[in-house]
Length: 104
Image (tube, rainbow, N blue to C red; front, side):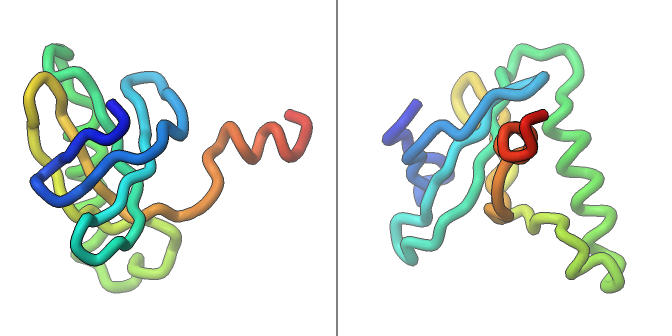
């Protein structure tokens, strides 16, 4: 999926990892060059975990006390082709990276 364009403005550049329900990539806005993370799950899943995650971020973003607690802002959430996608802030190392850093 590298070099794939999402939402007509987010270009996937590098696969960062794979989780229980999908994959995560680094991407950038082709206009601003700002970097983001994008989560991708197959559209054919019976219950979209990505949509549930989106709803949680949306709920918490309404409470201004949660703005600086390390939760990413969601910039795009949609179904494209055979995938559900969510573009969000790129916050830092993945859990897998942190596990490796701490020798599990």
